[in-house]
Amino acid sequence: MPIKKLKCYFCQNKTAPNYREFEVLAKFTSDRGKIVARIRSGACAKHQRRLVAEIKRARHLALLPFVV
Image (cartoon, rainbow, N blue to C red):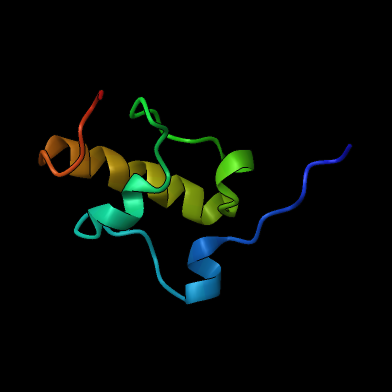
């Protein structure tokens, strides 16, 4: 059964990932704190790259945990 193609969250809302919006970034991490792959998150390539950088920035500033 083929995987359903998800729409990019950021393209739909016309926003970009930002480390200050850590509640939104938390949706793109697993229950163990790992960054979710692009296929599972549904983000486009451009926003996935930016998302990874912003999640890492939020972790560095202690807004998101490295592990749960």
